[in-house]
Amino acid sequence: MPQTGVIILCHGSRGEQGALEVAETLRRLTEGVKPLLSPGVEIMGAAFQFNHPTLEEAVESLTLNGVQRIVIMPYFLFSGRHITEHIPRLIERLESRYPERQFIMANPLGLEEPFIARVAKRLQEAAPELSLNSPEAIEQQSMGIVERLLPPSLNTSEEERLIVKRIVHASGDPRVAPLIRFSPSAVSSGLSAIAKGSPIFTDVQMVAAGINRPLAEACRCSVSCAMDGTKKELDTTRAAAAMRHLGTRLDRAIVAIGNAPTALLALLDLIDGKEIKPALVVGMPVGFVQAKEAKDELMKRDVPYITVAGTRGGSALAVATVNALLKIAGGRLKC
Image 1: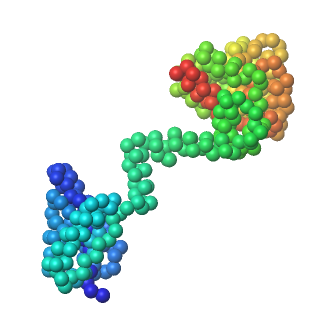
Image 2 (image 1 turned 120 degrees about the vertical axis):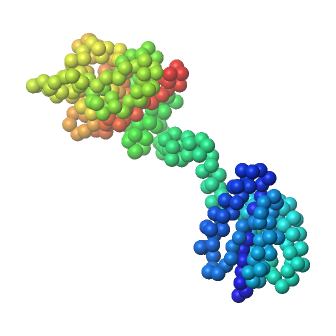
């Protein structure tokens, strides 16, 4: 096989900065491509216009080194006039000048997958939120997947559906969707409470920590864990004691319970005693002891609630519910 040389031919640039980039680009291209080709192939970079070496200069250099066959690779995206007319004419002149040499013109870069990925990368560099790895993009993609997984028979309002999607996303299980229960006024009461800047109380710190504080603060809603500063009583759990300790502070508040069934049962005792009526109870204790029973009791009460029937629940689901309400309210109130 005759000795082969390769010329990577770019367009070239008039500008000072462009000329520097042309030289650097050709250097990196030739150094990067050379290890991928057969041993002994000589490779050079050249510019069609404005910069050096030109195509003619590169061909002359290769022929002086005894190269018999020269492959010209246009570093161009499209088959414009340079590709279809100008470069072929220049190659014809070179063939006349070097009749003993063989010239081959490779196809331009064209529409290749790596270039599609590169375009996406440049867009993501300019606007990071467009990246699939950004929290916004991941969340948007996740919500689209959840929407497709929801049961067709799910009968909810638009706002209830947004909350269901958030709960399903937090649980990672679309089978939880049919178990979510809303009292008739749950969403409207919760949004009204947020609009008034009502406080949000939680049974455990894990729920309080997960609530979107910037959104809550923008809506003037304080977030507090009921167990902060309380001690366990002899005859009950610390979570239940915390609810009793808060007492009337829970009236017209949003109460989110994501862990302790005893906290929900204590809250229901306060409601039954006519001491309080929360604006909304997000009742999602989890487990096999009293969790299902506590939620069943909640659904019998004349109080706005959002819950998950059965033993499922947990802090993540309670957090997802409250954050969904805050996001809806934030959009309405421009929080």
